[in-house]
Image (cartoon, rainbow, N blue to C red):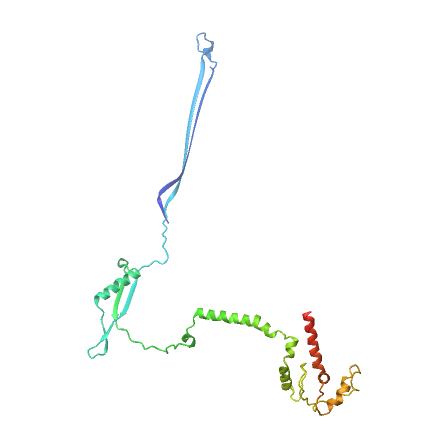
Length: 290
């Protein structure tokens, strides 16, 4: 900002104008002529007045010059660029590795490329230096990264997804289909099993135990040497009388009774628990059918 005291500038002007006009009539004054017969005593008197006024006020201020320069950030004054490229590899006279200078046409093309990339402006004083020199060979340091186990495996995302889906389906079938079937309790008749199965199971648990009662009457010989005697006095009463009647016959070694009913009664007396289970199974089967 600069002030110029020799010059001035009008900043405001105020002008005011006014005018006034007045006129009047009145009798003449009493004088000596009023006593004369031919005097001007009877004349009229008239007056007129005009007034005009003009006012002007001008305000001045000292002349000033103000300049404002805005400079954008990041202004570039000059650019200096240096580019170094490797020389061309080649072989010497004896076959040893050597370097050859690059052609001048290639250097000119590289210079133009760099100048266009950096926005070189010669009028601004920018400088570009391009040289081709042999680079020193640097031996690679460290070790090469060997592929790991996961890198050797070629894992397909779709195949992996299919395997996961199949595993999930197999798990669901095992938990909600096979497991309830396997955990379902067998019926009473299946638990008793066939005669051969019951006999085999009893033989596995206790080889010396007598064969379980299956409900069938065996016509062959029966070895009662390993059975204990049943006394008629140790029974709960004389309701059946079967134990006391056949206890001496069972305790003696000899042929079994020929009567099938007698043999059945003897087997029932020997295997009371199994007899109760078979009867219970029959009764439950009859109730289910009814």
